Every structure is written in structure tokens, then in C-alpha cells.
Length: 166
Image 1 (cartoon, rainbow, N blue to C red):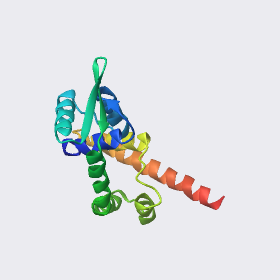
Image 2: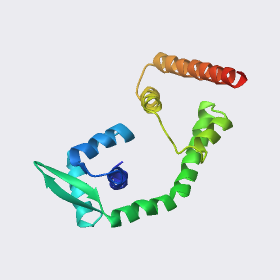
Image 3: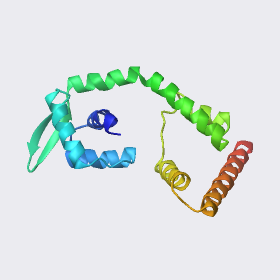
């Protein structure tokens, strides 16, 4: 995730100035990742050296603000969005095939009408499932998790199918 930290910080600061603590808090809320202060503050210093952000003292804290150069970098990221989206789509299709997710669900996720809004519930579910599938567990535990996921998927599809008919 460290390679993305610079862009995440720019995105956060594009919404307004913030302290290092505030930036870290927003990263934790929006990206579900907690960068160490040992990674964040050197990155902020480097970004300031590069002219991407500026800082000012506010009591005991430094408050950071994005510069025009930083906004330009952030804007350039939009131009690579389609390439990233294609790569993500390939991964989603693979997961869809492996996890038996239908094409309509994948198309909805990739639609230009929504912009990859991932709720905290989906992030939490992803984390739990990945821990269950990747971690070392008894075979019985993995089978139980698979059964729960299949049951939940089936029930959610039924709810959505019922919703379409109403």
C-alpha cells in the first residue's frame, strides 16, 4: 500500500487541509489501512520537498495543504483510471468465476454510473473471508466458512430477485 500513499494523501488533501493525525484517520476510515506514523510523516516531508503539499504550524501540529502541482498530479491520475479499471475488471472477473458471481453483478460493479463505492460492510466481509480462506485453519472450519458464504450469497440473490419483481 505504501506505493499508493502519496496519491491517497493528495486525494484527502484535495478536500481541504488536514493534520498528519487527521490524514491518518481518514486513510483508516476510507481505505481500511493504517499507515504507521513512521511511513506517513517522512512521506509528508518528501511530498513537501517535491512541492506537492505545503505545511504550516497550528499549535503543536503541522497542517498540510495540497498545492497546484499536487492537484495536477491528482488530475493526471484520472487519465490512468481506465487502465486501472481494466486491470481491476480482469481481477473481478476471475474472482467472479472462482466465487460464482454472475456477470450482471460484475457489470454493475464496473459501471460508469457508480464509482467503486465500497461500503465498510463489504470491506469487513472481504477481510474476514480472506482471513478465513488464506489463514491456516482446520479443514472443517474452512468448509463451514464456504457454506456460510454460499448460503449468504444465495439469500442475498433471493432478496434482490424478490425486489425486482415488486
